[in-house]
Length: 516
Image 1 (tube, rainbow, N blue to C red):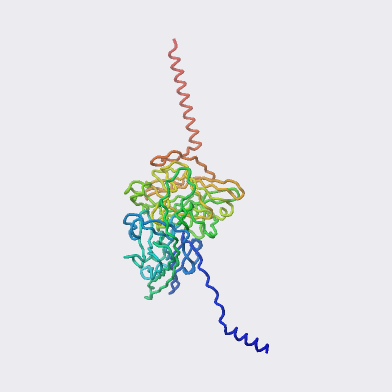
Image 2 (cartoon, rainbow, N blue to C red):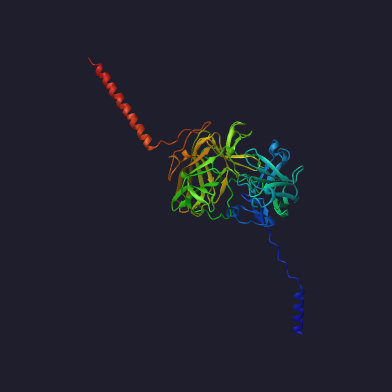
């Protein structure tokens, strides 16, 4: 009897369907510095992925967009600016929310996984197939100040697709929404192969938009000389609380930093470079991380001159007063990467710094020598500017940078010529020792400017601790340099002594002639 009951129970269990495991909740992800849409082609198969900032840096493939939820952290609540450039977002003053703050790293559209020559016309088409959500969606790019390019969206009259060049990364991408809630966007990618076949793929993005509560003051306060604690981020708060200040988002797990130091002078006019510190014991040194090679290498600042080509020359747009009068020329290395221009940034990601330093790293601009005005500022998703450094203001000017961060900004120069920036980075080791280094960052602006004199005696050296430049005015100090060398001072003293001796002898001779 018991055996029969046991057999019956076993049979019932066998017929009972197995419990379905609960589906994993999508992970929260930030768009800062990400390849928001990464299209790749493998033979006749196309894929569309999301790559966060760490995956972009390490070259990882990325994830299915359906496996992540973008937002609400890292975004920006704002209002549609006045003027025609942003009219596609709605009426001026209308509240909108951006998936990224922008000044902490715009996301990008990436087609580097599609080799040039693999598809007809070297173009990939990205299409907004459908959208579910409580409000309107818009996608656009920002490049130079005031340059806005609508891509696609769900609003009246908005395009539904855009063509992207193969083998490129289009930076400065902004996704905006005008109502709080959950959204699902289905995007498709397509391209025509050389065989005549068309390949397609699609993916669904999930975005959670928080309550849209723009800050009363959309732009940060003017730069306060010698007292700025950090770059002000435009991150939207989770609640009605004011945005918290930060220079850039911390990356969850930075890729292994390049450790090789390369020798040899380099004029860099294209590609990605970063300025950052390295720590060896208690020795702290500012170097340039050169990402033009794989793996990247670190170079001494004295061996590098950044060259700004005339391709970077634009006219000052209206409303950006710190750059000059509207219509005047200005050379801009933009916050987002552009082919044919050097793309300088700054980071505190070297392994020795992340593991050996506590607290923030302080970047101090001690002085600028050059023919015109230098500024460094961040742009947010709605075109607002946060000025970090401005050579028309008194020095020193300071910026706090959290550990394990990587940031890019807009570097501007008002006139062609050679610029030398006295930059200092300071920190405190985990052992409590204060460390600092001051170097010269040299930039040659304009096609007519010879970069080679930038490798001269003022190119910096280890422990090169130059004094601050005081004052302010319309332009920074100009001339051959802000420091008199010991030899020049000695020669000046000798000349003064000789003159005093000659004057003394002449006076004695005159006195002797006057005696009876």
